[in-house]
Image 1: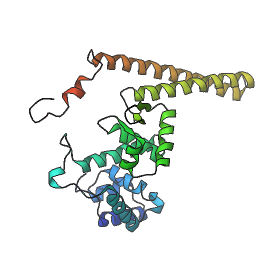
Image 2: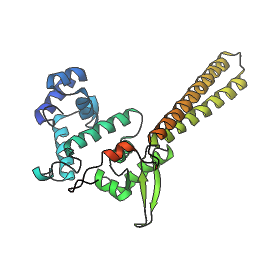
Image 3: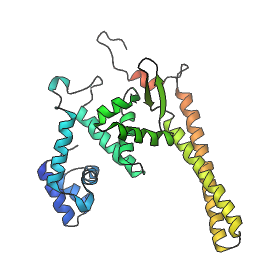
Image 4: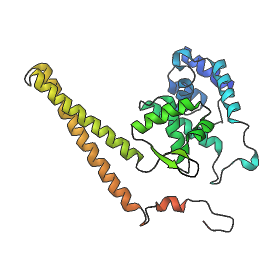
Length: 256
């Protein structure tokens, strides 16, 4: 993020811009920041009508304390050479995007956390620790994600705990679940058209809706199946992704 994290002065300028009726683009331009930084800052601290610079600053400081001290120079990067602050910023951006698709914020945070975890899976306890939230919040979020088939649950026999897994097929499953919902809507609309009378204004409207969802659902299924075939063709004979193997960090002796 250009210029580092937002300062209290930055937050005061955001509050002043909102009070003056400026757009997010204008506020971001005045700060020399990405628009996403301003929109995320406002969204997580009361929204356009409730944003207060002092409260936003205290909330940010509180989150920083819960995450613990900043990494020292010797631990500033992880095994892949990544900056933890940059990863945190990416997680916030990902979460904001997922919220924009309709997911509740806690559910979006859990999904983003799983996606950005190299192992691709975490237990409920690990999610609680990483996100600094209650077990009940995690339970509700993973339940919603399982219902939408965006994650799957695996039993860890060694630890006798469930692990919540994100994999390459997660969006495929979620997409197919949406396609099935579209098919259900199409069937309902067609039945409704027959009940109301296909030539009546309301019946015609439902008939058109049914045709729309039927066409969209079929296109979604076709596109998802084509992606899955292409994705499977890129994998190694052992079912592992060559790209992921190449990006694995080297050990001190030069091995992988």
